[in-house]
Amino acid sequence: MDSYGLPMSFGKKSKTGPVNLQSKVEKTKRDSAPVAPSPATPVVKVEEDSSPEPGPSVPKAHLTVQPSVAGVEEEGGEEGEQEEQGEDIGPLPPTNGEKRKADGAPEEEVGEENSDEDEDEDDDGDEGDPIPISHEIVLKDHKKVVSAIAVDPSGARIASGSHDYDTKLWDFGGMDARLRPFKTFEANGNYHVHDIDFSPDGQHILVISGTVQPKVFDKNGENEIEFVKGDVYLRDMNHTKGHTAEINGGSWHPTDKNRFLTCSNDSTLRIWDVTDKWKQKQVIVVKSKERGARTRVTACAWSSDGKYIAGACLDGSIHVWDTTKNFARPDRSGENAHGKNTETTGIVFSRDGQRLATRGGDDTVKLWDPRNLRKPLAVASNLANRYPETNLIYSPDGRYILTGVPPASKGEKGAIVFLNAEDLQEERRVPVGEGTVVRILWHSRMNQILATLSTGAIYVLYSPRLSIHGALLPLAKMPRTAPRDLSFSVADLKPVIYAPDALPVFADQKYGESLHQREKRAKKMKPTEPITGVGRGGRVGQSATATMVQALFPNRIDLNEDPREALLKYATKKDEEKKKD
Image (cartoon, rainbow, N blue to C red):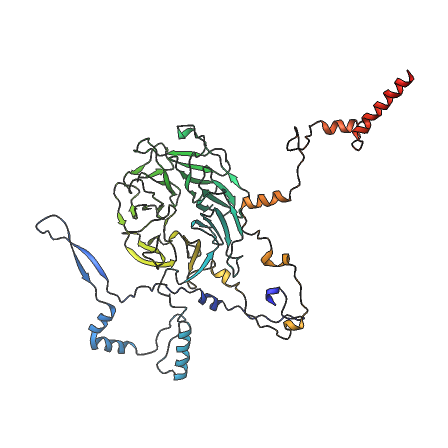
């Protein structure tokens, strides 16, 4: 009867059982969650030998292996056991609320404690792993690669953009078991969405599509603000009021809710003010050493304090500007940071602003000192980059740099690569799902990792022990398994006849409808408007003064009178006058 929308019983409603959140969380546990490294594993260090040797002045590296904890205990021998026996005299200290098994406890109590430990074993399985990747939920509503994603500062709402032209808004607190967005709209018609970002107060959303005009919406996807486009016939970009070529990326100011940054193929970065949509606030023109002195700015970013702006270009260069100075020329530049004619798809500052990381189209990730961009501090290679929206981020604690990679071979999954933030050594690789991992976001407040894939799916990785809210909210709204009152069956109820149009299968699917489809459907229901001016299409036109003339002379024209009969009246009058003469 649930399929027909009818109750299973009448009268007093049956009591619903409590929601077993623990079982719901267990269903979202990942099969391929990596195991944290064991502390007993031997640690390998590389030390430099300072003693000079004949030949080239290159320091020689030698390996020193530290013994494991288990090995140290074995070397202790009987002396360690005697010391332990001497220390065990007297009651043991408290263990901060943790259960402790006494030596003289009965076997039944020991068995009960062991059973409790077995039950909690799954919960504490990721106790040694500080990264929230033990569980996952999948948000699947896009049809093509999800190229942009953002989460508001509170962690309650997600905005995503895709190559299917749609921008979708998700709310963790409002989602149920279906995990569907509450709003879908096309920000710029049939253009791919390149970037999305929330304002610092979470009240506005910046949407960057493959057009020359950035757009800002409120947090519900309404109240669109479209900024002006520049004059394409002006050569000097300093005199244009907006972009004149496709915009590649955008980022909101980390502290100012009214300012945001965009970069474009017109070789400029522009700072905008939400309160003035008719002109940008400042223009940063990038001068390239290539022919024509122009290049494409493919990525841009603010520093965490908003004092610096970084931009990456198609000619392989990266630049850093100081916002307190003139933007006529960059403070620091690196001309050969990445390969020429390759898109540097991501650039990000560290939280303290002392490091700068870039994700190149030459399948590398490089670490820089913003004060010296001539030579990278470290390089990680063989990281394939298939999409121009692939980004990289810092972890909230600043220990790791995360980026996405495609599957290594057929049948494998796209993965998130964790690189050491000091030397870019690969720490771990977490498989996510089928397809290429494009965008990654680690929200510090929820402590959850979001990854977008080329298949149109959004994976939310979390840990029940380390994460709060976010993915845990819709799990509490899963369908409840309450006891049913089977006293009434289908045979006891009268049959219900449904018209074909009333069934959900045949209803109009207005959800997920594009802007063009909504306008086309609205035109069908709109009545035909009267024609003003000259008639066309076989219809008689109507001038602006026709209504006034009809009001002044209402009796002069009888629309119901036959014109032939009116003319024959004058013919009979002339015949009668002739007969009289």
